[in-house]
Image 1 (spheres, rainbow, N blue to C red):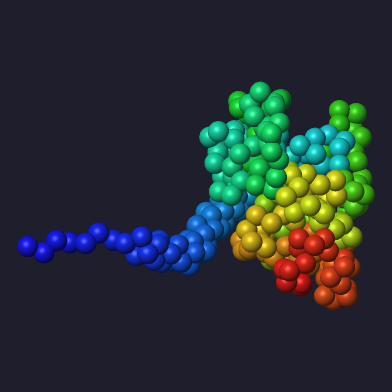
Image 2 (cartoon, rainbow, N blue to C red; image 1 turned 90 degrees about the vertical axis):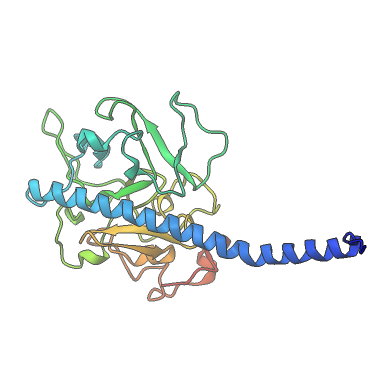
Length: 275
């Protein structure tokens, strides 16, 4: 009778080493597959926002949403249909990479804030039963300014851009280069061509306007819906070449056409392609 020998310690170590090697090869591929799945789902959400936006403009003389009276076009989310407001029932608000709101339902800020947090939860008049939260933001320069009860109306958006330079309606010339929605740390965006990205890659909030959407959620890209209702991924540095408002300088300091230098960027964003 032949007795089977057990594995020796050396053989076990060899097997473990082979498994570890295979895992090290497979894990990056699995991460890429998971990320691709998130990207596809994220783009699908933005396409749905494109349909919602197109339907709204068709019913409102081509115009996008209004904003709170006599403000730099704040609080547009109060003016969308009620069925799209509630963060618990409308999952279109969330990129799969950023589903946890930065505040909980009690209004308490989560312990660790970073770019993979959603914004919100905002509650109050006109903000739905459970409030608003999400991980996409609208290009504020498409919104309609609205007067207050006395008829006063602001003439500039946040950051000082003239409201005459806003888009306000769909179908503008070059609409495929005008952002409508993109991934963001706030529900409204006011990028300026001279604002750099956040110095800290994982910063959950940035005081400058471009820092709200120049965030590394998808390995150097953010998904973006454009004014012609098309959707595609956009390189982080490519954001500076998009026509956010009519006088946005798409050949500014942070573009190849404007002579961008590596020193213009914080370290975390330097390895990504320039545009």
